[in-house]
Length: 491
Image 1 (tube, rainbow, N blue to C red):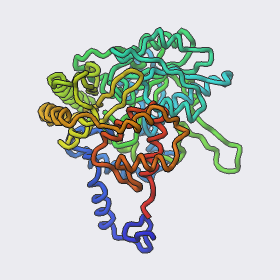
Image 2 (spheres, rainbow, N blue to C red):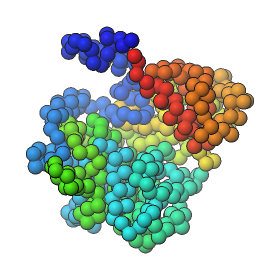
Image 3 (cartoon, rainbow, N blue to C red):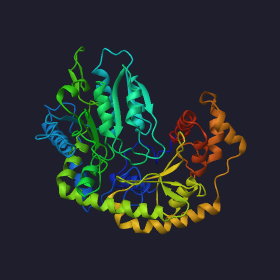
Image 4 (cartoon, rainbow, N blue to C red):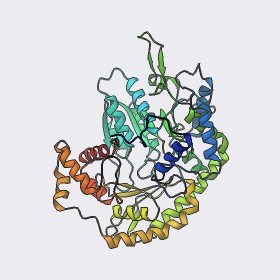
């Protein structure tokens, strides 16, 4: 029986104020998007009035359709200006070594990376089984692109200390079928910048395109450099870099979702387009994956960049870097923890020492204290870690983090690690993904506190401990099944 009081499509319409009140009630269960205590998923500059400006700009163009730039030239103009801004920031434009840079506005970093792979693949129709080479630390969106586009993914290991790939290993992984080499500036997980110059050099020597995934850090690294932070070459100023991506809904602080994909010249971008005229309707021509696109995010991004300006972004980056140093000092000063890597961007990544606390318990304890972090599972000899995406909004609260971190570590040590039943731990280590049955998954979910229709446990340490005990293929299958249980309509 459908509960008409909560149905999205009720028999009779609901007054506007009641609908908004219902949304606010639902939102009350979410993590806080403002206030500097959520270290993932959202990017908050803590600039008064910016949200209202972006929302107003979004509303002005929400119903404009990016499908046809001849019908809505306002979007074409704003997109071109966003591309120009990103190009100037990332080593392109007039009076640079990449004067003919072109680009496209996409819905986010994943779409930008999928398009970078698609463009490289389609530029080589002579290769029947194309491949791409990426570091093991590259964003999972490259794996998604390879899966969607039927391209083979060749991963290069990263050094366990530097967390970077070696250019020699990248060179060794390149085959005649390789159409693209990728690197990160910085990698999302650990916040370190790959050796872009050396990787671009080996890619160019092999005649292969090189894409820099700067979706996460592309809008802050140039400003960090201006503030005196040592930032290695990573952008279009580097010979051999053929494309680069940057998300405006990250450190440009625009609403989601807006990203920019840049190519060094129009010829390199040409295979990105999809055109189709062999049907009786309008001739379809798309530079990106979507056809219909709301102008709202584009207008909101344009308004945000115009309002903050270059000086505003420099100041926001200064605040963010100050917060990064404060948080990093807190980790260094806490017994049982260490930095996974010295911060060189806007990420603080911490892990436990040999005698340190269970990190998954620590994450839960930090959440109890109002700090929402992102746990990362162990991988290929790398230990579990905790990722902190640091934004300008963190700066006023950063000094509070150290005492809460120390207190959370003390509590986590006292609690000890999550104790999985031996048979469950053995199952996680030996079970083949295809052997999972519906009954087995339902039983595991119930034991971990996961319920159908959105039920979540108060603490996630047991879930993360189980996932950490499983190899990646089984993790993937378990997560698919767990999320599938959550994503069921409430009848």
